[in-house]
Structure formats: C-alpha cells, structure tokens
Amino acid sequence: MSLKKSWMPAAGLSAAALAAGAGYWFWCRPRHLRWGATEAELQAVLPGDDLVPEAEHSATHAVTIEAPPEAVWPWLVQMGQGRGGFYSYACLENVLGCHMWNADRLLPELQHLRAGDPVQLHPQAPPMIAALVEPHQALVLATQSGEAEGAPDCTWGFYLYPLTVDSTRLVARCRWHEKLGIPAKVGDVLFWEPAHFVMERKMLLTVKHLAERSVRPALPGEVRLATG
Image (cartoon, rainbow, N blue to C red; front, top):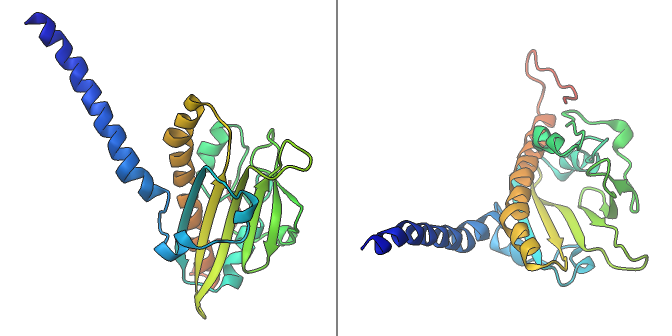
C-alpha cells in the first residue's frame, strides 16, 4: 500500500506534465504561430518565402492599422539595433546585451535602407541582411549563411497591404530552417517560438500605435521624442 502511495504523486505530476504539453502543442502553439493572421494570409506565398523553401518553423502574425502604407513604411525601414530599435520590450532585449532603444519618432537619416544593407539585432551577433526592400510594400530580412554561396537559414518579412485609402494590413512572417539535435528542437518549440511571438506581438502593436498617431494631429501637450 505504501509503495502504491509513493507512486501516486509522481504519476500525478507526469499526467499533469503530459496534459500541459498536449495543451500547449495542440491549442496554444497553433494560435500564437498565427496570431492576428487570417486563413488567406497564412496560406499566401509571400515575397522572400522562397529564400527558405523548406522551413522547419514558420510564424505569421498580422495587425490592422488605421493608416495608409505610406505612413507605416517609415517605421519599418528604420528598424534595427543602433537604429530605431524593434519597438518591442527593450528591457528584455537589454538583459541579453542588445543595447536596444526604441524610437517613437521618425529618423530621417535612417529612411534609406537598400537591399544588401545590414540590420543588426545584437551588437555581438552577425547582422541580418535586407534581402528585399520594396518601399511601402515589403521588407524582408535574411540571415547570412555560413557558406559563401549558401541560402539563408532564416527570413523575417514585413508586408503592407492596403485595405482602404486609410487602412493597412501589416503582416509579419518569420521562416527558419536549422539542422538541430532533438534537445535544441525542443528548446526552439518551447522557448524561441513563444519568445518570438511575445516580442513580435509587442512590435506590431507599437508600430500600429505609432503609425496611427502619425496621421492624426498632435494632442495638446503631446511630446513625440525618441525614448530609450
């Protein structure tokens, strides 16, 4: 009897862990990988998808912005560490040594991104490269492959689709392909995917706020400055 009782807590914990894992895999993960995106946006083949044709992981997020693409694009094109930031949780990024700050105004000197230009995520990490720059339509960043002529192993794209004269769909898609061992793959699913969702959701909502604010008159006493 005592032996049976000693197994009960362990069995209960195992069952709870399995239930939590199943809940995350079948309910939570499918939702955060497609937050805000319509079925049509999920199924769409977007510019830059072909750079990582057999992606092991893909996340598509989207938000509606009450502003035209021309008002959204300038916020995207100035993104980057040492540039306008990524409009997300800088405090969390700085824990990892990113030295990030987020601009809440447009920076004219950073409005001229061209294909092939580097975009830094971390001061100590190799930059992503602007693989595709189509003003007011699409910005796709890609990692540099370790091989000189190799294909990227990750793309991060931002796409602007006008809904009306004064509204835009901003779609973000990240695709990555890595040859990892099983422990690293588990870490990718349980940590990096949800971390990407949390940070990118904040980014999209901040860009929405900034773009919508930019097309309305400033409120009395409102100050629009770059913030750390």
